[in-house]
Length: 316
Image (cartoon, rainbow, N blue to C red):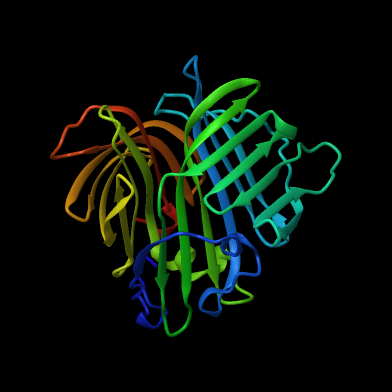
């Protein structure tokens, strides 16, 4: 979009709300506002007792999966973290629903040389395995999920994000941390990477959880992009505290990788500080691990989690 006027017929304003998904929400035939399932992502950042952190992501569509990653986080902001596996399954999937029990099941097909995966989903609870069970994680939602609708004359878009507590095992070692599931819907026949949100609008995308010393928690989503595309969602102790917009001013290193950001989310201002490079797709996307710290209330936190994605393809 650099040097090109934004066509307002695409629509860039967002309508943000808190909601509780039903089993059908997660299934490929769910048609909210007449839109079709584009993609689902199940993701997490967990650590074992020795302090080794893992960043784990699996994407799947109605018929196939084209992205899978398990990274061993290297807390060095000068280089990308190494992958734990190089042969995770990519290909067609079984994507079914057990309506009687309210469960969605996604599985890899048998494939020689690839490590299988599975995702079992119930409302606000799911299990994600990779590498034939060497990664085995259980998710429980922290509270209400976020959904935003981005209507337009030329194309509509809908997106949901649900943040979770995560526990399980990686390579036989107990791990815990945070994660979630994101789902995108759009016009039938348009995939996520062809959608207006991905190709035109989004620039920065942040998810985070803070668990404070007194046991209270907050979590949220902050998105910023071109025109007036903006999403802000903040939940404190199970109650939505903000559902509207956000502003993100990002800082980058000499090679363009995110080093930090100032983020305005409703009444709160946060500082995001990068602690590790998770991964990047050269010239398109950069993904960093870090911490979100309130600028005006320096509460002690026993656990913090935050990821930021920078969509460098926008040329900014």
